[in-house]
Image 1 (cartoon, protein in one colour):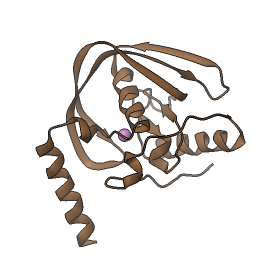
Image 2 (tube, rainbow, N blue to C red; image 1 turned 120 degrees about the vertical axis):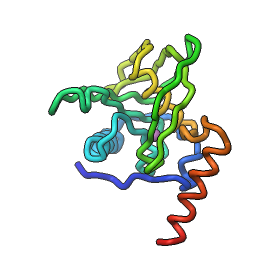
Image 3 (cartoon, rainbow, N blue to C red; image 1 turned 90 degrees about the vertical axis):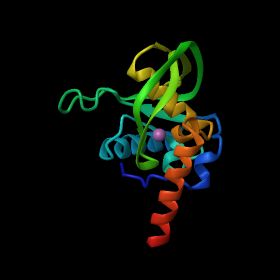
Length: 171
Ligand code: NI
């Protein structure tokens, strides 16, 4: 297993929709293992394949992280499809490993249903209305080329973009 580089804004790849996984082969299993290692090292509660430069519809999440020392509950969802089943909620202080040094409140669905398959190819179905629901919405957005800063005001997004461009120029 190895820790992969995380692609960050404004890398154009992050805006590309990903492709469904057709065969869960050795290569995909290895990608998932590397994604997990990368997420735990960051650390983060979720990661989409595109964030490590892989053009595949895969998300991993672990919301047990940080709750208890050493506790892990990795969930892998391949080719997820999401539907919003209930109203809206404000996700406070959302952040993203691909959007360093920035956090913002984001409007999200209050409840969701997700369908996909796990790493063994078994169908999974998740219904949630809690923190994990928000994490799933965030990660599945990545598969559609959407970052959380695409869901905030244009003014705030512009401020962040300018800050990043300035930092890149200084480097
Ligand atoms: Ni993210």
